[in-house]
Length: 115
Length: 111
Image (cartoon, rainbow over all chains, first blue to last red; front, side):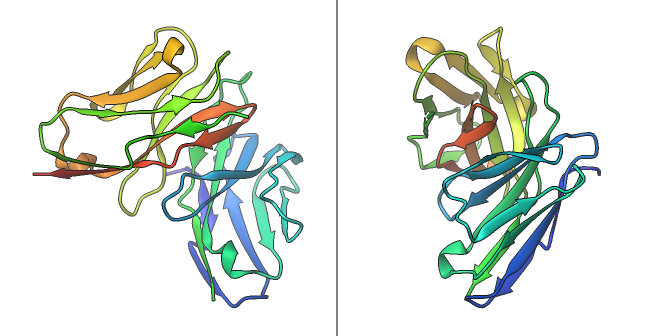
């Protein structure tokens, strides 16, 4: 299976610690998205890349959050000085840009618990 | 910005019953619409999508959805549900390049 993969699948951390998540997109996909999902809600957009360029960031993405996609392949999402409110499922999706008609395929997510 | 409303938060059905899940988006123009499903313990999977053309879209596992522009709706239907359809269903609309999701509908199907 060559779908979107995410690592780790679960992360438990103490408040104030930094965490980093990794996403590997489907290999030929040039777009990569990060979303956050909390219990009882749909996924909420955080940011996305086309190749290595970060094209949009949500207001949800505070300055404690940073995302990179240095070579246009995998991406990392780092959260500094974690807070309990950061506890959520962090989802990655990828797509092949096709003139606005692209479809996003999701990975299994990383579940973050901040104690 | 776009928003999506899913009015059915929790639906309980018996096997073989018909299903319709509501989805409304906030404003018109050209829209790309999606239904995703999340089975227990699994990741989000695409059920079906609408970009243009025939407003009646057929997806996987016998699901279909109808785009009604005048009602800003994209309701999901299945004529006869199975126990294996138990899952959470999310409607989404594309806003520029990102997806805006509804809050989801939890479907439970009892044998």
